[in-house]
Length: 406
Image (cartoon, rainbow, N blue to C red; front, side, top):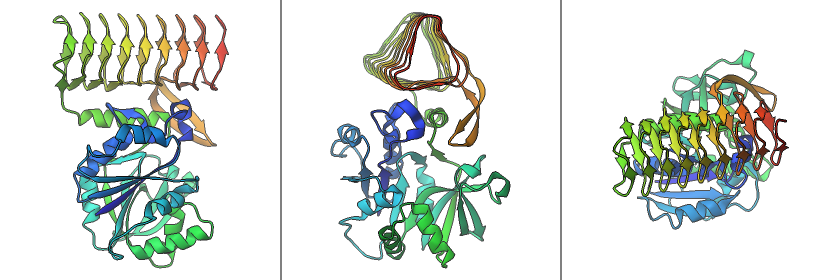
């Protein structure tokens, strides 16, 4: 069984987090998103996978190498221009060999769907699609049904005209005839996969559906925390023999502590928490509530972190308080930085999003000096420098500079 993973996009809505990497390589619970998807595929009937990459593809190649670490035959295919999801699919289908009647599984690299749902899809006799119920269906392709088949798919409909809460996950199982019709549409300028398939559905194509409750899409920064929580809940405990953990620290729940990590005296770590290799925590730091800390991070004394995603080589000094935040790689916080978190509303490309709880989001290599206070929903680009005792509220572009007390 063959699969194609579309992993070429940057993820522009994620701001500075994707300045030097595509969103499929953002770390969640200790692994890039794309790696989690490949592990799910290992538990299915899929044996061959083509990964189509474009933006910042060198990170994908460097991380996965030959792909031999998986129980899958993995090939990496470079897309030479950004021509939408259909362009990515056509790249993946190039030089495709094998039985013309063989169907192909198509997935997006910035989604994670569980192996059980994929296996259910692979068991259907015709063409298929995984669908999922969503609280905000108008942000996706809304699916209407005729029995268990797709009647129609409406991309991002008006919120007042929604007839279903079920949406397309973008996980398709398609035969050669459907793929050939997609190719013809592409030659005529169609670049969106869902639009091409919707056209075929209107012309009588039958698409059977499989429903799942375990699909997670990442389109905005706050989606990362949600998926991180889901993955951490599935993570078994592991404490490396090379980790140094002080006897008077407290570790409860499902906790992963990587090689060479140091946990100083008086720390409290309440799982689910993932702390990667070569980190240093504390003394007297408190890490709780679905938090992931990537490799090479240093968390200072008396600092409190809850329900946050801390990326590689982040340095956080003493007495900081960080909640429900996403902190980009190589970012540095001096002492007494406070991040508040609460329900906020964000508007992205004229679409409103109500986020239940959000603190601070930073891009890469930001610097927050002593005593900075961040309001809920504050978002920074990359290389933002914030002077001492500054109060932040809102969104700030890459390279923004604040003087002391601004």
